[in-house]
Image 1 (tube, helix red, strand yellow):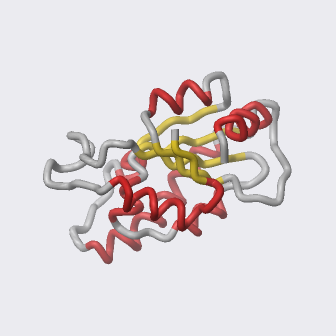
Image 2 (cartoon, rainbow, N blue to C red):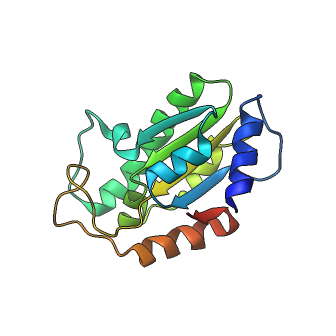
Length: 158
């Protein structure tokens, strides 16, 4: 995927549903400011992936979190999509999906002609407080490989 491809998709979604065979799930590596410049003017909802867990009873077990994340995200994203006819949801802090090795296939059911999801993660491998505890660190190359392997051509590095 290129920046121009992303701009074209955003512009088309601004006018309503965009019928295509491909699932509109993307991963973008770069600063959130760079991504905001690209999607400026589009039908955009920008949230942190962590917002899906506000008020949730979070288990400490990685295995339980790996099961909880898709379930909570499906419910939360569906409610966001119900508020809009068409649009793009940008989810910051998508490295959490890598951290817990959550398969991304569940997100395909939440995309379609009317909605696209962009999973955003930053170039600096160090997590920022208060998003993650200070001890949580990610190797950007491993996170990048996770999204490239999962999404193939639907990955963009800014």
